[in-house]
Each structure stands twice: as C-alpha cells, then as structure tokens.
Length: 432
Ligand SMILES: [Zn+2]
Image (cartoon, rainbow, N blue to C red):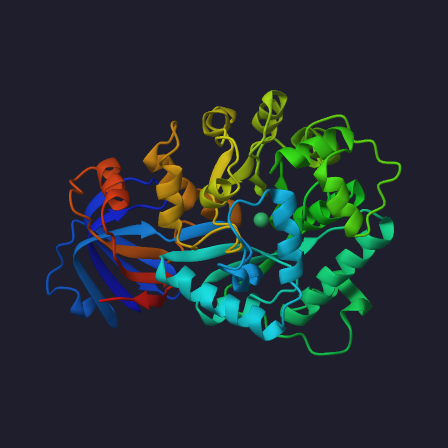
C-alpha cells in the first residue's frame, strides 16, 4: 500500500453517509480498502509506506468545480462590479488579448487556489487548451471543455478544426478517428490526469449545426458536453425575438443578424426541445448545462424529461445580481445539481466552500444537498469512480457533533482548515 490515512470522521463517496474512525488504504490512484472502526493492532505503521493520522478531522470526497474558466484568471480584480452581462462580456473579450505570459501566470495562480481549497477536479472551459499542463503539474484532475462558437458554416468548421488542433497539440492522438489527419509527428503524451470534452459556447453565439456537431462528437466518444444556457435576461430576449443588447455585442463580433428575428422560444426550449432533442435519452448527466438562471415553466418539463447535469455558479450569479436561482424547481425536475465557480472575472475566489456558503443563503437551500452537488454529483458528471482516491481532509470544525448534516453545517459556520488533499492517490496539499 502507498498510503494509510486515518480520520475520525469520514463521508463515504458512494453513500454520502458519515462513518467514524476510518482508515483508508490507498494503492496507486485508488482507495483499495476502507477499514471502519479504526482499531488496527500495531497502529498504522505496518499498513502502508506512508501514514497520515488525523484525530479530529473529517474526510470528504474532493470538491469538483463543475464550471471554471481558468484562462480568465489574469482578470481577477480587473473588472468593475455592477456591470450587466452585455457590459461585462466585451471587457472579458478584450482581456483575452493580453500577453500569453500573463494568461499563463494567471492559470498557475488559479491552480494554487484550487489545490489550497480542497478541490481535486475541475471542468474547465478552455479556448486554447492552456490549462492542461498547469492542472497536471499541480496534480488536479482536469477536464478541458474545448470551447467552440460561431454562427456561419464556415465559422463552425474553423471552430472544430481549432478544437482538433488543441487535441493534437495537448493530447494523445486518436489515430483511429483522425486517420491521415493525425499528421506525422509523434503523439504527445497526454498530461497525467487531464482529458478533454467539448463546449459549444451558448445558444446566442453558436449555431444549431455547431451544437449538433460538438454534441455528437462528445457523446460519440463518451465525453462530457457542456454549454452556457439561459444565463441572462438579455439572452432570453435575443433568443425569443432577436432583439436587445446582445444584438450590438454580436454585431461587433462580426455575426450578421440582418435577417434574424429570433426563435420564438426560451433558450432551454431551443436547446433541449429542438436542437439536441433527437439525441437525448432519459438521463444525460454528461450534458452539463451551466447557469440556467432563467429557466421558465415549460423548461422544467424538458429538464425533467432529459435529466442533464445543471451547474449553479452561486457567487458569479450574485455578481450579476440575477433573480434568485430556481433551486426548488431544479430539485423537483430531478436534474443532477452541480456547483461551479465560473471565472475570476466575475468571482473573487475559486474555493468551493465559499460557493456553498453563498448558495446556503438561498431561501430553499439544503446544506447537505449543496455538499453533494459540490462533490459526488460532480464525480457522476465527470465519470469519476467511487473508488478514486480523490478526497480532502478538513479540520473538524467547532460544534461538529456526530451527525453528518450538523457537521456539514458547522463547516460553513466555522473556520475549517484544509489538512490534506489527495488526487488520484497523490498527496497534492498538506497543511499539517
Ligand atoms: Zn462560464
């Protein structure tokens, strides 16, 4: 065994139940054995090469940040508060033109913030694949969702070509699929712990053809497909009748809207009820819909029928002062609820405990449900097995008690230091 880790409190990633006095035995990237009760003759020493013994600590599944843009981290603190979405977006687009060294430094800093806050996996929307190597270097599981957007057939083709170039440059080539297009060069080694997904940007920036292409590729290859949808009132207006402030923004981006009169439906109805409908089954956890802030009545029926994952970004949501997030309706629709940070261009941090704290202010919030959304629901969407040695050990907060729900509440209400964090069996953070 590589590691034996003893903790006084343990939340099981399969059942989410609390157990007392647990020893985890880790071999390679997996938890090989869980000993409950904690009494082992001779102590931990003989059990594994390395031992960690935590008396007053709780081990939770590692946080899964289900929506980030690490390549916008250099904009941290650079964009004023109080902007509407159509005012904010041009500032971010301008920020993408900053020197590559600044972008890379921002990503590296962001990876440190991720590791220091007990996050072991990130679903990162990526324009150029820049976060692959830094995430791997910091030991974080990274799923890079390669962003594609464009309205014309030409733009769609270029976007998918760009995504394939990133796959060629950053990941082992899939020669079977790409054939001669795979090129002459030797396949680069896939960065450890990193894989890719696809992300058509949003229904107002991305054509039906491009959505279907990216979605088809992702699902054909068993990958995640994630997209922003129903984020703002301006998006809803634009998709319904082709008017409003997004017209100007898209016009500046070179999209010709002269004959566009809108689709006459909500963004979610367009996406789920029309564009993706032919491919959707009864449960679609690998389709990650981000925001859904303005899901409307009929949309919840579509969500209940297709049961995708839906990612709430609580602090980014608060930054834009959106209407309260439709938590109760999402619960009723039975979606796989996830939590993400969004980018540092609309958030002040990347710690998931901070997101749960913000979400817990919601009138309908249930703290245990939020912790599940931030951990095991994310594992489900990203395809991380229960046995994966991805977990974080936290100092037991004051007032924790012996029941799970009380303990999780106490983690929000009191200082909760991170003691150690494991990703794929590697110790990636250790404070004591
Ligand atoms: Zn986003």
